[in-house]
Length: 194
DNA sequence: TGAGTGATTGACT
DNA sequence: GTCAATCACTCAT
Image (cartoon, rainbow, N blue to C red):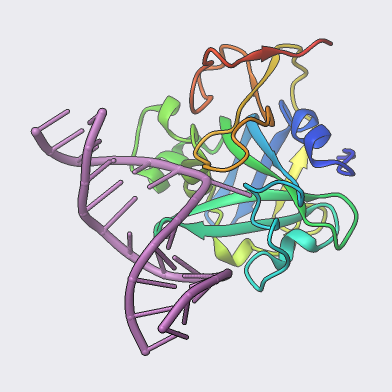
């Protein structure tokens, strides 16, 4: 799966519709990416804004590195690192549309409603079985990969969610009207020209 | 060494 | 609508 990860904001848009696959010992789970957010080093909301630390070091790795971090004491979030090595930008995967291994996702999440399996950054990592041991692995060599997905023209952007800094940047991308997006369109939504 | 914070979620009012 | 859960990290003693 070739994808241009040289720029996080552009990559966040390119990743919409791609298929995220995880082959684990329990089985395979996969889903289409329906919502992403971009974070760069110039971005006050990014973990890398204040420089490199042991926690965010994977974000300074080569493009395609997977950065999994633990937050709020109980949730993992998954990012795909972008840009040149040493720069520190990434795309947060916020929501998926389940495609394969839905029964395994339901078991991992203890939830049966497919709409609620992967419609949030903490939910999708749980459903896909992604946690800290996958931190600093790479999408081209590890058990987590990207595959060709669906093409969609209905991509919107909006302000990002759940952050307190740089909330004005429209660096959240999602598929219009998709039922698996974590939060539906707000009044700040902007339509992206093709 | 300890307080404050957070790219969240789910339970409860 | 509010709020607790709970931990890695940062920053200030």
